[in-house]
Image (cartoon, rainbow, N blue to C red):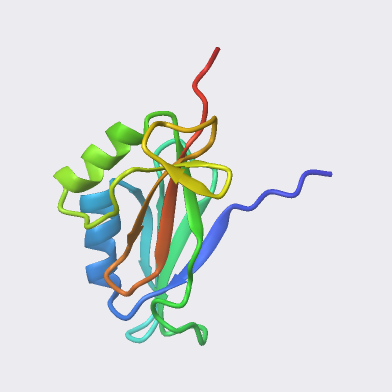
Length: 134
């Protein structure tokens, strides 16, 4: 049996502001934006190449905007990902490299290069570089 994670719900204060951030600045694809009633709206976005989407919603649930931390994206080129985010006005950390628990100046080992950013509500993301194809 497959168990697939396909949607993560992110609590946000302003769906339009979050949509602009994720679609226009980070580069996620808008899958659908559905207004169920005057109070309820569901917006689904997917990172390019991902099988898992995020849902931004208003009028449903009890989530606190900015309360989700540790979401992680994986890329093959951390420098390109950093340049993309900075070029689109996303405040993010410099590229950080680790060897074990120690931060190092060089690229470190496989899987050990990261950048970090937050959405306008404070939901926290990391971007990790994975080894490219052999």
